[in-house]
Length: 149
Image (cartoon, rainbow, N blue to C red):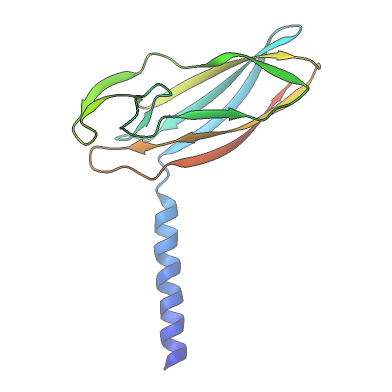
């Protein structure tokens, strides 16, 4: 009897874990374009499922987690300025009792880099949070590796 209970518990927990992993309303894609002999622009695209929104990099404290890009240090390249984003939607959200800025559908972030080497790979991570009209998911983190040729 204990074996059956143990097996059923394992199956139940596995099923719950599988459903929890299914809710990922943001997919990320990356590319780089050389813009000069020693310059390139990284394009980091987030595609957001209908009904969800991804928060801007520029949020005041006290609200949702803002999107944060962190780049690995390398002798092959250096960042030029900050990661750019298009103009977000800004609205008052009752849950946070403040104006928040976010993106729906898709957004392309851009980061310029100075190249110290002809070809390289820019590595880093993006931390982000998404919400819909009913709930928010816990902050998530995705690592990236963008080849620059």
